[in-house]
Image (cartoon, rainbow, N blue to C red):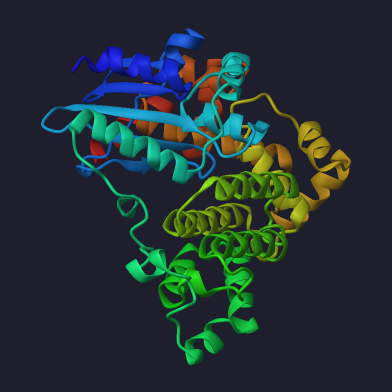
Length: 394
């Protein structure tokens, strides 16, 4: 097969970005082709990649999928894809993830906004298609969602028809529903997995329809409404993001024609909201204003932000932000901005081949010498000494 032309045709037909890799060598990249920007970061393909396709992401808001071309060193990576509209936070996360300078922001934003919105279930279907087309091998949704696999009875009959009265009474108690919402609110993925293994998703709601398919859809809508209102938003997920995601999930649910797919989508939805709540969870002893300011700073290390920008983000004065930071963290907002930029610099020195000039420009330092001096003052090593030290260790 001509994989290069296959990838180009797939991107042309779907508008979903594609990357063709031979080991670490990039043979084709939709992003690079359309935006005409250099490749600032190497794509990472795990060494233990399974034979069947899989998901990959660094940030919960940015999804990729990988298909291995069997018996070769070639991989096809599709993505990034996004469930929601591109927010400034998602855009900055993508720029940081790919080490793209702030100067390329507008080009990247235009390209990302052109990508069709897609959730994990839809992404899985694309990967199944690609795997079958390339490797002539079928792949099931259970490969992507191994922690939840409905039984044959669940898929073929009403989702409550084979449940005993005792199980119904236990699993549908109000306390168990509240426990689920609290897990989502706290963003505890491990506890969510344990909970879902104990309590199947197919019995988390009361009968609301005579049709098994309509029942599953009604249950989905009921669950996601409560998850958003009682779990995700109180857990720190912004109202805008939560309701946009809810709308996307409900629209996708209404399109589905099998209970199996609806249950899989619901599992995916619960995990997604749990991840977002965990990312937004406010630690003890930190106010919401300081926490939101910290997140804003961490997500804008590749921009020339100031304390005024931080204050504007939470709609307070600079003196208010400065006082809160000193009281709760013991440092000024400016010092925290500097700390985050220098920690980002450490990662760039360790995991990329970017030069000191490139790193300095990427992190928006006024000059390379200023960056080097700030780094040495903080870590007692010059940037190059730190890079050599970490290379010896690794």
